[in-house]
Length: 389
Image (cartoon, rainbow, N blue to C red; front, side):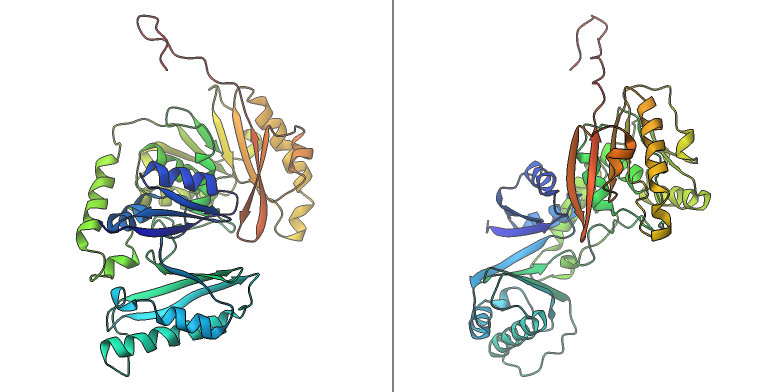
């Protein structure tokens, strides 16, 4: 079976999480770079990666890589690629995104224009036509140039993979589904442990946790652009990926996941989003101020994205808010809590240095994942008083 190379981008700082996901799917990692992981696979890999990867924004099929320091070199190298193997005569193709870092070719618009022209020249000779109607399926390209090394990819996902299909209503500063999933996967949480998000907004962290606990594939409710590439990816691979996803789902399980927010309207939106995701039976949403947070349960988890003063008038309230967070969370003395925020004074006002602090870039915004580890729960015993691992 023919081997292909795929590239999946992710938030800067979360490459290790995505790398583990890809390995767990059974694929060989070929490279890990800032904000992207490359891996080998076959035709089926495209469908399975789109269906199952929780922490990537896209699955890109790598077409070629080469060095280019001039536009002539770029044109000739692009023209030499067998585009007819990928793009049919009626295909709609364009460079959706071009980026250049530390390279002699640095104008994205010129790079996009040259690449389009080179592909047209190639396909004109192959298909023996002068005009392309581009009325068929879409084939968006993504091109990066790093230190004069050009990497050309086709985007197989289409709409970003953080769009799972369940979040119709959002709060004013929602955390993305991919980032929420990654935060959960950075913790030791599992479906048998209680999880609370006291600043849940439209419910993304609780919903992603429920999907992870129930083994619901993140792509199960949506379609992917490459499904329309009939000449390259057969229908059977998408059918098999969906069947695999359905087979893996857990239904007869119990989970204790809770989401609170001070805004009653956004709690209504969170409930609706959970219903859309098919996980509402496992999540309890409630309008509640963080000051009211308490639990008789032990060894639970808090994973949350509290406000961090995006607007100037909100920033003056942050010291008091984070003091309250420190007091309330600290009273749950056996719990672990994970706080992602762009507020760089959070530790100071929480009143305790985090056990771990991980920098994650949410787009261009630098955020901090403050990790406070509680004690491990005692190991359970079975009926013969044997330790259950």
